[in-house]
Amino acid sequence: MNKWVTFLVSALAVGVATTSGASETLSDAQIAAIVVTANQVDVDAGELAVTKAEAAPVRKFAELMIADHSGVNKSATELVTKLRVTPQPSATSDSLKKGGEENLVALKKLRGGAFDRAYVEHEVIYHQAVLDALDRTLIPNAKNAELKALMVKVRPAFVAHLEHAKQLQDSLGKSGG
Image: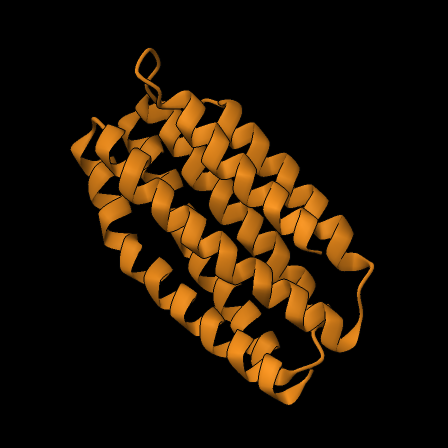
């Protein structure tokens, strides 16, 4: 499982670093696509976890991820519609989508406690990577004030998700499963 988590996080980090280099910056349309894709990756993983997780707290966390990340996507979609901006794919959004699909394939092979631990491990690493991308690239590069404000507004939820996932990770590690 670690190789899939590493791939997904690497895709986010490398993609953001590549598209935000000195000679290349992200447009608001690309940032919007990254935001939507990053949230959808977590919704998709959450939907799988709701059906496969063994531990009730993991299922409850997955339900929260579905609700919260679907809500962010709804707000982002409403904003880009209002601004008449069409989200534009980039290397980062494409990498996120591919990594999310590969993560689902890997997770589908697991059962019980192994699934729970792998899903939660992914959530810890993924939320940290998204926070890093928000802080270092996405928020600083957003030119539209409303897009930037949306990302700033949802950032605390990502922090809360990360802390919640870390607590779950600790409890799964202590209980062995």
